[in-house]
Amino acid sequence: MAERREDQDSDEDYEVVDLTDYARRHQWWSRVFGQNSGPIAEKYSVTTQIMMGGVTGWCAGYLFQRVGKIAATAIGGGFILLQFANHSGYVQVDWKKVEKDVNKAKKRLKKKANKAAPEISNVIEEGVARSSVSFAMSLPLPPPPPPPPAPPTTTL
Image (cartoon, rainbow, N blue to C red):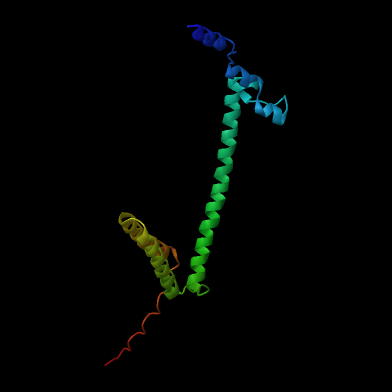
């Protein structure tokens, strides 16, 4: 029993530290940025924080709206110019080379898929087929063939 009393006495020697109070007094950003910096919650009222958040959010939304419209216009315009260049004959797509590259990628994936589980290999094969079709559909279409010559007209 004497040993238990000594253990209880040694437990009483430790001081309990409140971590929340310690964190408030020793903030990492105070050491990095100085004593005047700190969380906004300690500097401004709730109303001011809500107003600042609203104004900042509105400005960010307005900026992203404008930039998004410009980006969409540039991408769409570029796509239209590529289609125009293709139909004008400035862009030539080597469809045989595209097919050869897609088949080469299929073979590589099949080799890697054979090492994986059979369930995964089926998913990969379907994914390659779908991705090659979607890739081919995203490329500009070849120009249409010229129309056949009109048959000669005979009059009696």
